[in-house]
Image (tube, rainbow, N blue to C red; front, side):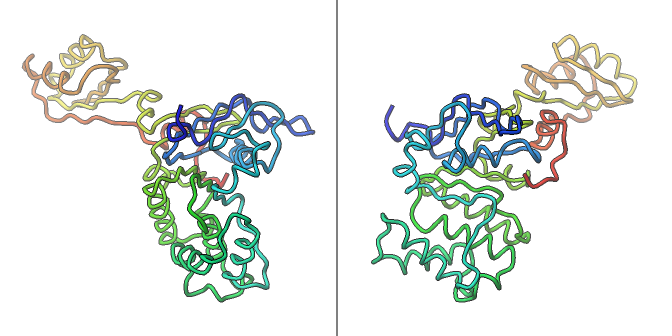
Length: 316
């Protein structure tokens, strides 16, 4: 396998058990393809942030293996973390320094960063997150949203092969959230793999190419965005004349559709392997007046609730 084809993140049986006996992460096998925008979802206490911290070498796993950009972690942290940008559990900076000076200190600590290009890189990073005008303002005067933006700027100081963002829209207003969504798309288009953890389903749904859903420390769903259809049945809704409902029900059942329901002139059923066109053709050829047909694909929220049994109004 060439480096270009190698997954950005792979774990095998990744487990974290705390001294209290609590299992925060229970044997998960993550697979984040290179170039993907991987939406990492889960309710409060599901193990997302603990997983991210293990990926970055901030927490040592109890069991299992982690490979990031082809190297084992945490053993390969010195080689791996250079091309990795991360924002985990909110940024931490010196309150008495300006936003720009905080980034200068971070950049100076990076032995692989070229001091000759520092000013240009800082200007670009601050501009990308909308902090150009506030760069000279002291960090302690920043709002929560501005602090979050500065954390994103720190993650973008250099070109990255992998960007790991834990709740990147925390504290941002709707406009800021849209800007982060645009930023994720932008860096992904540049070839950067992005793993983004968020409690905002709409934001994840609009940018991710792959997703993983955590529940109680386990990875209950993982794959391409299109894999949602495999985990929740796609339904069809048809409307006919009320006096033809019984005939339509027999036809849909005969086609192999499951869970056929009838409510007046409206019938619902699970499509399974049957194409919507076959449904309409069967009804029309049998003389049923087809007044409407709608395919109801699953939403990310429906899949999340079905797999975890919880709503999605929590931060982590």
